[in-house]
Each structure stands twice: as structure tokens, then as C-alpha cells.
Amino acid sequence: MNILKPVSCLENLWCDMVDKELLSRKISNLSNYISELKNAKDINWEKYTRDSRSRAFVERYLHLAIEEVFDIANHLVSFCRWREPTGYRDLFNVLHEQGIIPDNLLSTFQNMASFRNMLVHHYEKIDDEVVFGLFRKRLSDFTLYIKLVRDWVETSQQKSSGYDQ
Image (cartoon, rainbow, N blue to C red; front, side, top):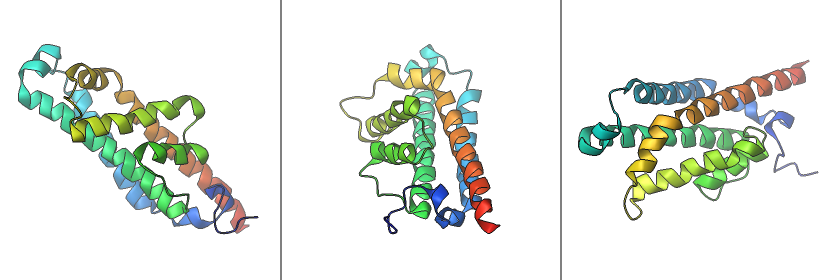
């Protein structure tokens, strides 16, 4: 029995310490970034490739959304005292290990980390087709992430309330 390294927050009361107000603010920020991107219906491929402001808007809001995803994950890892991730991709492994991210979605979220690195570090050159494709076809990944986190928090609260009895 390993007392210092919990297997799951559901088996420990440590996750009762998750700052639900902070988590709610972060989820709200993420929802707002995604909403702004979804509402940018006027940005089509032609406008995206020719208008630097449109391109910068899409890149920046995708970046902000991904950073918020990381902040939410890091908050859970820290407050639940899960193992320290070795990097952004591993952060999603930790969430997977704790039952937040299912097997079939792990690579989807790990790809967010790779995309973020491309945006931030400009590896080679930012691929406009990739960025625009994510902007138009993958925003639902963020909504799914919010749902997975909310579902896990709700389940965690229900399980931990059983300890109070």
C-alpha cells in the first residue's frame, strides 16, 4: 500500500481541495475562447491566407484555448497530488491514468500539445492548412475536454460525499 502516491483522487480526500471556483473560471475562459473562434464565421480559407489579422486571431485564440486546457489539467494534477508530468503530452497521460481521458481520446489531446509547440516555437514554419483545419474542424475537441473534466469532477464529488457518511 502506497500512502504517499495516491492511485486515484476518488480513493483519497485530497481532491476535495480542488479549487472549484478557479476551475470554473478556467472552464469559462476556455468556453469563451472557443465561442469567439466559432463566431468567426467570416474567416474563410481565402480571408485566412490573405489577412494577417484573421490569421493572428485564429492562431492566438487556439493558443489561448490550449493553454487553458493545460492550466485546467495542471490544476487537477497539483491539487490531487498525482504524479508530476514530464511535459505537456504527458500531462494528458496523467489525466488518462486517473480516468478523465479515455483510451480512444488520448492521442487527440496529446496532439494539442504538439500543435501548441508548433504555434509557440514556429517549428520550421506554421502550416496554415493545419491551423485552419483545426479552427474549422476540431473546436469540438475543446468542448469534449470540458465535458470530460466536468463529468470527472461531478463523479469525484459524488464518490467523496460517500466518505462523509
